[in-house]
Image (cartoon, rainbow, N blue to C red; front, side, top):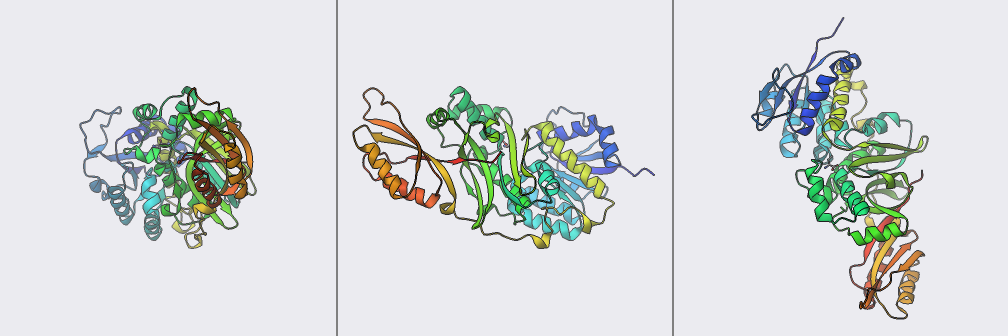
Length: 439
Ligand code: HSE
């Protein structure tokens, strides 16, 4: 007996919305073979319906009011692709209240209001699927939530903002300036509506909040992360790191340590040859270390019309397959059973432990290097490598680049303050973490 088609309401006809319609239409036959029934987008909404779009929308009932679609009785699944937080939250909660399943690509919404949304969904017995919210076309949510369900996850680390990765790659490969590359990244259509979300690490932090929750069974809590973006990086540090055999990458890291969780988003040096060091341009990659599987890696397009649509459609297929299943026996939204989600202690930045890259401008006179080494020795920080650059003609200062051994951030900050008060070293030393992930 063949089942009736499932009707879907699509909120948002932007890049991903149109990509979703294209993929659903082009691969309709394959998708039906997988889902077991046809998936029809019967209603769609956009703020401006007269805007030209690269898809024939005849046959879809178009509205400007998304609430009308969310309360449309014939619709079983609402796909939320409007982005932003407040309106999306109201619409998703209304859809759930109307007992509709939801597919969303909205990482900010889930990072900030996921707890409320998943609780509401649980009560109503509906699914909220969000593969497209993290790393676009890479099925990393499914991999962590289902594929690695037998593991105790030890850490995960990812390049999860394509815009920052594009900027860093261009600065690294072509020596181009930050502002110049940012403009180009925006024109590629990857950047967030507010580009500060990309360059200040906010977008990556939204995604890390979600990844950490499903990997470690901890509540979604954006406020627990320490977040730094790429906006302060300069070509000089990128070049020095490269001379030492490192690449600077913008990473989201969630690591379980005995004392608590490290949850941080920041630029860091990675040794050339490390898997994540070779992820360039707008590509994303996530590594996950499970105690049984060991390190695993997931690579692909982190954004873009059809790449993100691939995740949206996979979620639609999943939702359609679950329509006939017992709501109490579905894969839990956040991988762990809701009653088993437990907050783990989260470490303060001062407790994070890593090796460091330092770049200081020191006076070019005898004894200064010895003073620097003494300050680091006093804080029990070992120097793994040190390079003094040749002074530029007529300059009274030289750049000194240091790689340290592993140290708690609190201790490193103390050393930095002591170095900056030496008088022979500039204020505002550049300090970046050096990371290493087992291959
Ligand atoms: N602005 C995001 C990025 C889009 O650059 O990765 C995908 O979430």
